[in-house]
Length: 434
Image 1: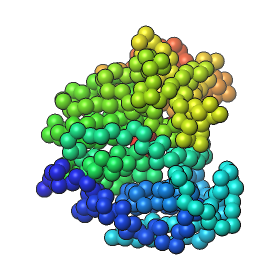
Image 2: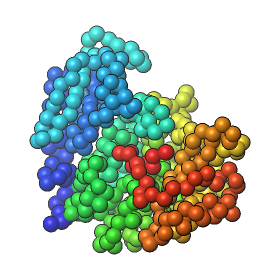
Image 3: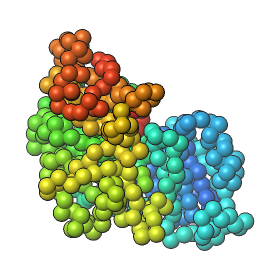
Image 4: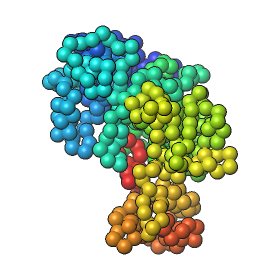
């Protein structure tokens, strides 16, 4: 039986249980017990209730909170043990409430200087530093410090009741921002285990009355392949974490007629920068001279930079590099790919994302992911995995795609090998695995 939106306002539907934000603000996990003001803390849990409970009870009380996923890449528990030792934190304690658990490590305050440690706790800080790890898709995860002010600067006051579906890891930037969006606006929130099949997760969101969903473009492409979506009355659709091409934006508008589709531009380093809801890929070039919501943007050496003094990744001038390579085309700023992801193919610099976008314009291709493999002659070779449209012969598609790309792009953009796959795999970040 579907739980309607008004019944979910003001809390989280987690499985078959509804937990109000008021309950979570009362510290049911007892995270503040034995935790002196100004302390440094690390928390490990993949459960949205535990992470949200920490956000609502620890801010303004402790100096620093590290949010850690259950498995810390790339070395799992070994990496976690090393990190806890480097932070100078004490032995882990397990906190549980209602079947949900969270591990906590407590240590002395960091003091006012970076990396400084004092022996006695200090007064509670004006703003707690929340440490979020990058996804690690291009290397070892890096810690980035934010405040809740920085993390929540994109929160919008919703008109009317909304029920959000949580499609992100709650420890990651996108997941944290959705937790804050829902709790700050007293909107409903429906969780679904990230390890469940996508169809089961979507069914759980639909049964919970979800009418607002935020996901990566990769995940949205998979959702669009599911049947009976016309019966899902979404009112708000948000995309983030990857480039959203025009074909995907058009498909979402067509499938969920009447829904407001918004592309959010954010990164762990910069936090949320701005959002665009005009239905066009990229963002208006006027944002470079007219800061959206007062957030200044600059293009430096082809890379987008965002002003956010609350991020530890900011330079002396307060700007943070997003790592996204962009170009101005007419009245639009378009994304080319990640600066760290560009590869040398036969002397030409190629962004895999550009090849993916081209492949997706093929009428028989639903999705694509392109990776690079080292080659002693060419530097790198491109390898493409494509998902065919329903009823398309995979062998025939594979045989013709390289010639199709060659007719529309330079030789450097032509994949050396094309594989036909059932779906594009991606980890809990929701991003395509390259």
